[in-house]
Amino acid sequence: MVVVALLPFVVIGGPGAGWLRDLGLLGRNEKFTELYFPDRRALPLTVTVGAPMKFDFTLHNREAAAKSYRWKVVLTSGGTDVDLARGRVRLDDGEIRRISVATPTPEPPGPAVVRVMLVAREESIQFPITIVPVADVSPAPAG
Image 1: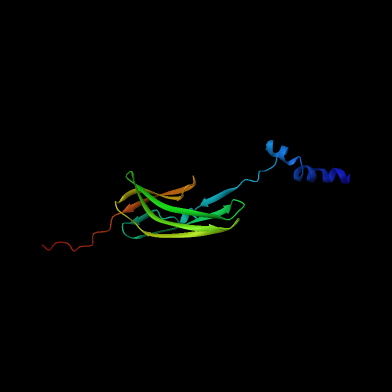
Image 2 (image 1 turned 120 degrees about the vertical axis):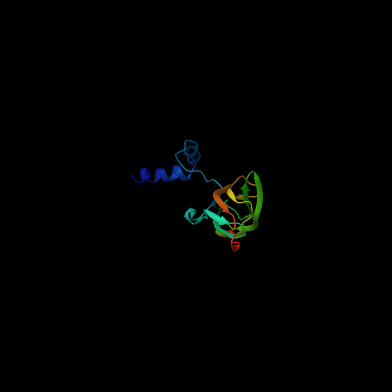
């Protein structure tokens, strides 16, 4: 009875582990990076031209080693890309870092997409936003 109880542990951790992974019965030790918005509800829906656009994104290193990441934020509006922010961060394996972005909102007004990209990698995340013009507060003509 004791041998039967230990057998699954020997197979999972021993020579049978590769066979079980090939069958999809045991998870793989995959290396990856998580890139995500920690709270999608907190992302801006609209922002005024010139006003600060503020949001956070999170990086989680699951690469089994320390890694340096270069990132950039790009706004796409009317087929044109504008770099808004960029940076570099080094994370130890398993480390999670929340990165805050605050950048002036460029023209033109209208619908746009904000994309956070890891430079030289395939990972990116994005959200839609509407850029609104600055309200005209000039005094009405006398008359």
